Image (cartoon, rainbow, N blue to C red):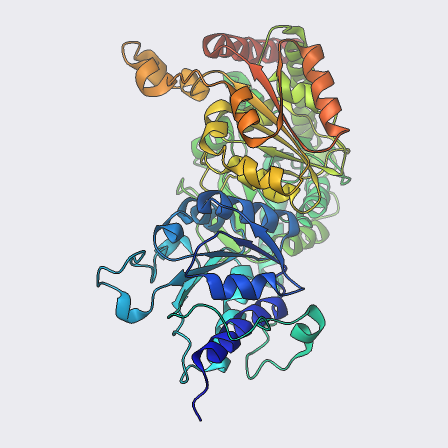
Length: 589
């Protein structure tokens, strides 16, 4: 007897959802549409999946990425067929480069409707190409479809999203009509889903890539032979790495040039050797020339700071080692002497245990003490300068909020100027929780949605971003308001693209404002009204501090806006760098 199609459809989508749950997925971000109906119903009727509705697929992809960053677990995405799937691309590009695990389910028309002019049908097979770690086109549900294959595919997809380098995977899921399963029993509760036999699908067991004794010995000998070494740490989500690198730094006597998104700047680990002023220090030619390393060991992604990357490129005679947990090339400068693919935490701990016992004593003390003394002098100069500017100054935003946060609060920072000001003006702190940003593709899009994805996990979030970045992702506010999230959103409004005022484009006065300054004249109070969130425009630092503290102690979403002048902002930044140079000159007398 032939089974009804609706029953086949029920089992097909039930297998997908149950296998997602069995593989550890706990969140799915759904955008509305018709072709995705079977999976949407299966997801919402499952007691083990938290369903987040996000009406804008572009926002949804970044929102899911925020949840995945916060939870360090894969998050599923679901959309209907056609251009809905295309709107995921920006978020998936960010996730791929930032190594954020996502499982993307795009509903599709059946194969016979492709290339036929059917409505809401585009080329979805392999749609994202190199922006995902893996992609597959599932067969449509019918009497001949193997549920064992469906389950095994989902199991494999979730596993690959976590496999270093972690990132998004894409499962294209075609459906024929009718789109309503036989009954509502399309998924099961958590207990049943996790205990039901998987009909032949596999478990995936992982093991870290541990460094060999030969590798450890070779690197330890290199460190013993180089007194002037630097540990450079770019953006990283590895929560075990900071303590291991602190231990490694202590044993080697090597300073840690820590990106603000590295996880080294804040936390309970030893931060004595963390240099949080490298961007400012390396702008000073005399300091940079006197502190050239002979060995650098880099962990994480490319550092945000241009002076740091310029220094790395300039010391061509140094030995450069790049450490990564995946066989991927994150080294655009072509200067690396050695690429090491293994578990970074295990390697750092092993090197710390293997170097000569006197490695960090008299031999390297002058080197590390010089970095630490200069960094302390630079930090005093930066703080004094920022606080001394009573006028609106973009760098002071981070000086002000640094003492307002605690280790339960996540700080998310937009690209362009905010992340660079974070690098300079936000000091190391034991009290601040995770500091994050979208430094995969470094775009200004999707920032609001990413931050609110983190807030979706129950964390209080402070987001600092520029006005153009806020404009790009205003739709992200809707998901935050609908789901009752708590977030403090600081919009630094300089009426355009502030970073271009620091770049050579500023020397093209005839066309600068039109092509790069891009003034918009937007009033964010109107946007707040549209999306039903609170707004306050702050005219001085007292009002700003009061607004941030009130927001942190309250509930809901606040937009706190501070307006600055782009031209004046450049002048004030250069004054800060001059103060740092003067402080170093005084310190070296």
